[in-house]
Length: 216
Image 1: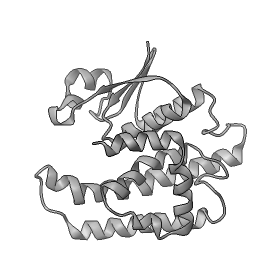
Image 2: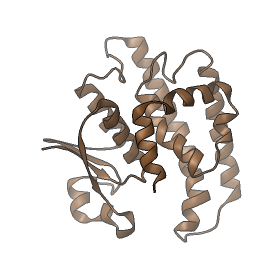
Image 3: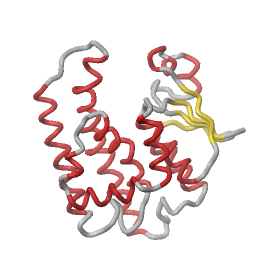
């Protein structure tokens, strides 16, 4: 049985898993769920794949998972990838988890809320953009990016000296910032962050996945 992703390429969290599979050179199949048809809310999918009716879900033989970061950690460990630090290196592991927590707790929520207000709210017909929330979340995003700018003045990647899952976790959202939110200046105006993105965006897997997303 092949590795299967249940999701949609327009989903940044689905992109996250695809990106890692591309990095690892693992063959996979995508079972595309159509949000407009409510595929992710189908009772069978909710029961068997994702109890919260989200994407992605993942199957690898007898292993069934949901939540993109958990899936990525599973894959990195299964294939002994250097994108995930060794549990034997306590300091490196702690710094990795610290950086991963910043991404999950501060970076992603700010962009997700901006996307909802600036794009999806009106597209879904559920209201007008709340400028107060937009300004609040732009300030939050700026704070996180300033933190990254400082960190990257001392190291090449967000969790240390080498490219890791933490950097990979950011890729879909940076693409979203640039192509959907039209906020490229948030990256371009920060020298170290811009240099980091130049390094990351030149990776073959990054190019492949971002090319797929810009087609939609």
